[in-house]
Length: 202
Ligand code: ADP
Ligand code: 5GP
Image 1 (cartoon, helix red, strand yellow):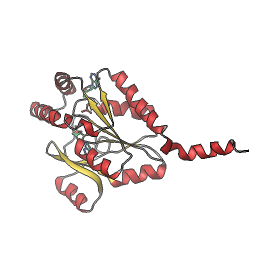
Image 2 (spheres, helix red, strand yellow; image 1 turned 180 degrees about the vertical axis):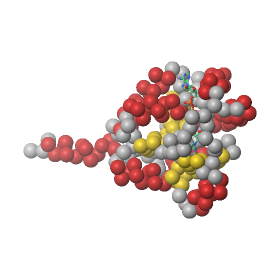
Image 3 (cartoon, protein in one colour; image 1 turned 60 degrees about the vertical axis):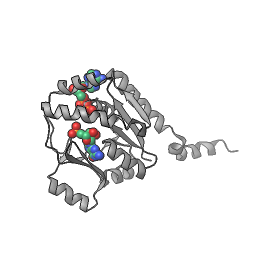
Image 4 (tube, protein in one colour; image 1 turned 90 degrees about the vertical axis):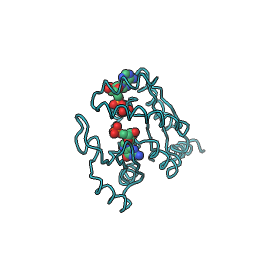
């Protein structure tokens, strides 16, 4: 049984840091490497952070209906390939998606039991400091991401969980707790319960 975890956050809130920690904690969780037309940033390498495409290549893939969801964010296209969900289901692994609010909305409509998590920096000032501390973006890019953050935050009610990322260690523990709790849902472990019930039969 695959649970799809969708994590969204305004850029700089600490989502990649959280995702990295959770993947180290449980390497069995599949992580979807998205496709994008954005150029690589800082130390990013093709196939690790993203698969990088030209706009023409991306649009051709949309045309071929290759994406489970796709959206335009900060002027670039981003999309999740259909194959990642099929592969996770075939392997019986959970799937973690780092996608924006538009993508989360599209997927929640398609995958009703997807679990959605929103990560929020403790304040706008803190978000700005984190974006600068990362120092991988140009000033104009930072300004754009800050103004878009205000927009994205308005959609937080779409999400099942909100993690206020103040202390990173606490936030990592909260994210792990969400994953643990979701894995204990009755609907998810029904197959495990039936054989146990059988042992109680006379
Ligand atoms: P996102 O993936 O949401 O854009 P990152 O994970 O890249 O954000 O984090 C942005 C910057 O903030 C990075 O330099 C990261 O080390 C730092 N950071 C993340 N979480 C915290 C936190 N709780 N406290 C302080 N700095 C943080
Ligand atoms: P960044 O350029 O900082 O890596 O990502 C910018 C935004 O695009 C983030 O909000 C991130 O979650 C989102 N994003 C990354 N991959 C995808 C994707 O496949 N689909 C959608 N809808 N958004 C994505």
